[in-house]
Image (tube, rainbow, N blue to C red; front, side):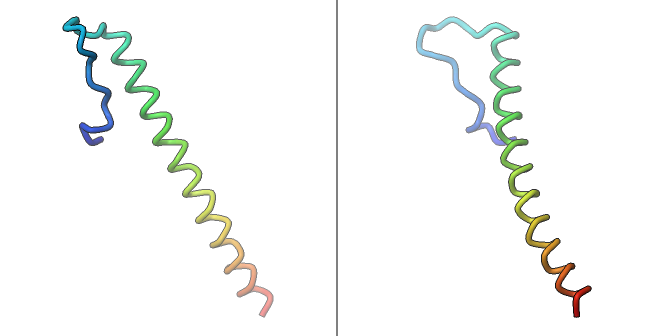
Length: 57
């Protein structure tokens, strides 16, 4: 995962707690997985149509 997707700590000067860091990383991972799932669903739908056309002919 690229570093630019990891939220940077605020200007308050206090480091984030481990739990807060883990929650942010899990939220970022969840968003990435949701996007990947949507891409795979779209690719699967278009691929299924091509297979069905091949069987019909």
